[in-house]
Length: 402
Image 1 (cartoon, one colour):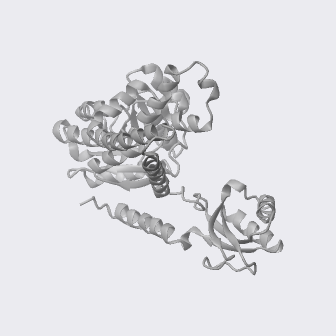
Image 2: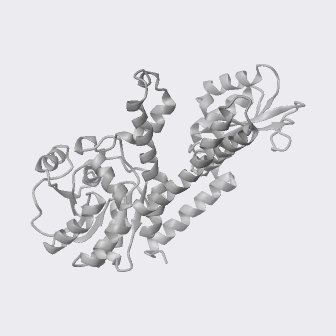
């Protein structure tokens, strides 16, 4: 790819331009607000002048409801050889492309799964997409040239290509992105309607839960209406859970009243389901922190022994937050770790590879039985690795979802 156009120089469009410009691609920037395009150009994202000839790829970085019209207009004037977009909803833009674009063969849907709470070109980062998934949703008409250009764009942005059907993508992001944004907004709105001193007591839990509520309301309104059917399905399921939770809490709020046992069971069941769901997200399982390696340690159940272990681990560069206790019972018995103590537990550290090597050496010297376990050694991690290999093979062969 030698030339590219970016239509829409907000956070995502400007970040795309910055990423590919680093690789010597000439980028032409356009925005309905000329000042935004000039700002992006001043950041080194490209030039705000129009191209003299068709570019290799045009990236449409506008809200979902505008993608179809912008694509049709750009194709009418022959802006590019191929086209993609970066909207977070895919089925609607794909329908618009198939129905109204002069040449839908030259278009492929795309969605980089990255962002920030801030918006506009000044919030853009060249490394915004590094290591992040970038969904591509080829339609039944998408040409190989358009597919290959989109793959090249993903590679230039250091992202990871994921190929999906547009409808499957929209159902997934309703759960992973769109409904969480709504929930964050609903929770943050409580701060305006409660006692005046509530915001001053905001802890990290509330900050985490509301962090994404600060997004552009008009952009998010466009996104949510574009994916309204999938979002409504998720909200209905949440409503079902809330309709169980509220009566359970009412029962628990009545001292000595009936139904308290049932209410507690309902409450604990919902909390347990949340724990199980969290474990489905890669890198949130205890001991699988997204780092390169794990270290397993058998620890005797003696007063102060765990504190001594954590202090030694800290010297090797492993923090207490990197550790979890995974099993109890005879030290190293069922889990396979050695150790002569009659009783104890197993601690696992998730750490970078270079830290794992130092950690094992330090702990061995301190008398603990420490064993390094790379993530590839676990069944779950191996499944993820195989998924990545299959995806890479699919992408390289140019096969579409069947």
